[in-house]
Length: 336
Image 1 (cartoon, one colour):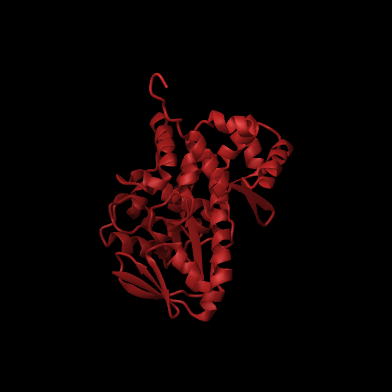
Image 2: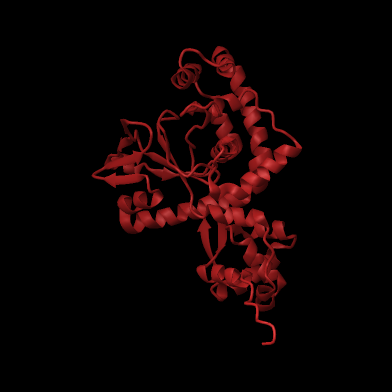
């Protein structure tokens, strides 16, 4: 089956990208509940489960809404971001302002007439219960997403820069062809291969939302705001797993680059800013900047500007160097 979205010229002109901490929080919680989570996020999932084993996270008002065994969940929990880069406070404020009627209608679309207890309580007192849900989601964000948010945000912004370059060089056809294998763009219509089957309109433009901690599929939300939101898995998710794994840097790479530059190169398997790297490595931004300048001059690191932020990442040459350093030398036969 397929979902077909009609995108007019005006809709295409209004299409934009956005980054949402709340999207990562909700997606991460849903991944933790899945028996077969996205392998690309396995590093974060392993870390999160260890954290929750030591100190469980109680979400009585929110968990039954997000993880119910149904194919859908209430769309008002994740409003379309109003700007390109929102904070968790922005996202939760928008969620709490959902009109009571919209809350009730969304709950019935998902659960039918026989609402489960958490949904029934929310429908009975939308304003008060949305505050409770917001508080639970804020705690989930602070415990599970915030510790890695600089890495995740850099990864998302790097993905957006790549997509923007595709749009500039090849238009909508190249952009949508590269977003995900389940997307097809043709004659002003975007077709999403999904378990849903109906037609829709973009309603003023699409909000394209890359997600690092979500499932490996495209998710379309049509009733979040006036915009249709399309969430897709961002590029380079495996690099986040590599960064969380804290793999040691090989001796050969250290001998070639020196300890500081080798550690920096390993850290940059997941994109980051100078400040992020300095905080992670326990040094000053100026010291990191000096090492980055040397690595960049030798083709091992590149950089991209996103507003006032400059994000660094490894080049293919650096990745090859790190992989080569991890390989064990061939053993020689006795007597040779």
